[in-house]
Image (cartoon, rainbow, N blue to C red; front, top):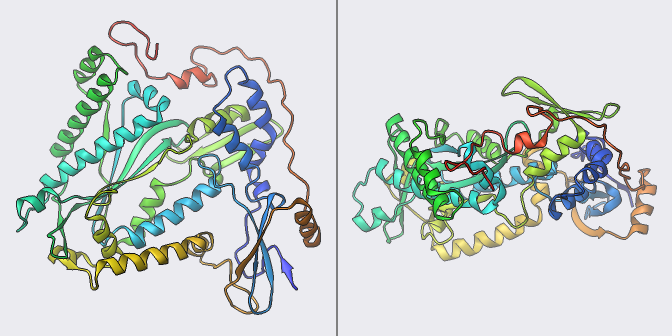
Length: 475
């Protein structure tokens, strides 16, 4: 039986232990945890880093695939599937989610990206409480529903059907900025119009008028008042602070809607979705100087290269790791969990209904219940091959295709027993050693100044003023 970790003409898996991020974590994770010992990070942060050190390393587990014809086998290392700390798993998740949204969720209509950023004075609370980002996302979705209903033509819809019309909304809550800094904001991909259902099996799409600057300013102001009212009602800020912020000539809230994708530009829509779901760190822009213990990161937006001590970089990265069981991708409007439009919009996407058909009124070609049942079975079948499906889409090379027989290889076993893994790796001529983290080292003493960029407190509270009564924020 021929065996190998990869075939010559197949997709070649990454060398996880050679990436700069892996070496940074391997060399400095113990020092990072020792430096913050008096106030350790949440348990999920340390576990994310620990599991990242096992991601893509054959020593921690293998999946065996075999060709049904010639019996050739390949062994694929396990992934950690952690969010925030592992760019590889985040990139896989982003590519897979974007492809599924295109094929099964988003019909062929125009889409617009909305980006909402709250002022620095409120970011402390949003960073501290993950649920607040979800509330802000819900308020944005409600505001966009009202906005698109005003911007779209009613046509011949009765009042009830028009009030039930909704745009398609997919919100991605990003916890990071371009400089690997904690910056929670919302990206929303929204259909540039509303969907309606007349109850007779017909789904219709009404395009929206272009977004003017005056309508955008009004929408931003309404959002500002809604968010400040919510913060004051929850006791996060005093009522006087909310009134003070409402009196500002520039509200501090930023709502951008410049990016618009046309109905037939599916490649552009996929790029937009991948951008909204992208990892926090790009390995192509990351550099590591092990002899100096420094991390360098290129920021193309500002055309600068940032440099930090390795433990400071790990601190920044630890802040953007999302808490467990917190959804960062949310569906609203016509794709909301309880929306009666959800099934019909998804079917229009699967059947590739054109924009013209949707504007005239599109009918499903067969009974919907049967279509949904078939779609569920196909989705479950595709989920088992999600890894291979994603790689074939991104790298245009199907990783489970036998190079000798050209047949699809099938999963045979998951190898998790240490002795068996060692035997396989020795047979393949690969290292069977466990990666070993470097012991904690005492950092050099340094005096932090008030404006020192290395001082963690500077970034944690930057741009946050005192409350109107003189009370420091967060006291």
